[in-house]
Image (spheres, rainbow over the protein chains, first blue to last red):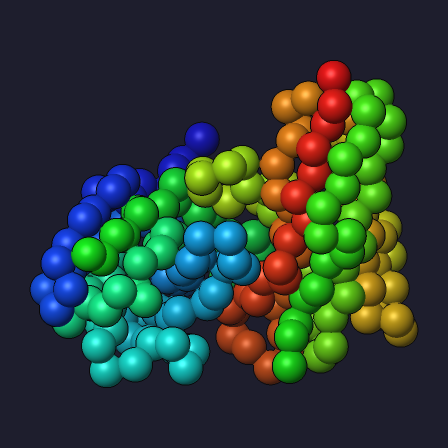
Length: 112
Length: 112
């Protein structure tokens, strides 16, 4: 069964540092997403990406965040200057459009 | 406003019993999906029901949707220890191209 792959599984970073979270979506999917889940809280939408541009983003996705599909297979989330409150599980997902998503197993980001 | 709120927040039942979880939402939707999350892991898609459907089955899962009440229920029959997880409903708002919005989830524990 096709999978969404996320790397790394766990990232520890110093406050103020830049981090890049990587995802390889399912190859024939057209829509890509990032969600995050702060420990013990609900899964929150960050951004959706279609046709090489952001199609929707939430209030959380401010100027510190950016997404990129650099080479047609990877889909990355960059946080420019991490804050303590960015510590969370970050999930990448892809879909063919209107149906279900396939989620990766997540990257646990710890900002210290 | 919150979109997708589950109840109960936590449910503990004996193995073999049925588990019912409910989800309410506020805006019009295209579809509603249920996901499972084992502790510290990724989100696994269980079932999708479209706004023009009222009931759907998949194995031991039964989902209902009442768009007039803006609510859905997930029934797991003959529960097993392996069903222990958090269960989330996620709605695709009618106004959105493709994003889904998660509820706060129900933590289900199956006692052996």
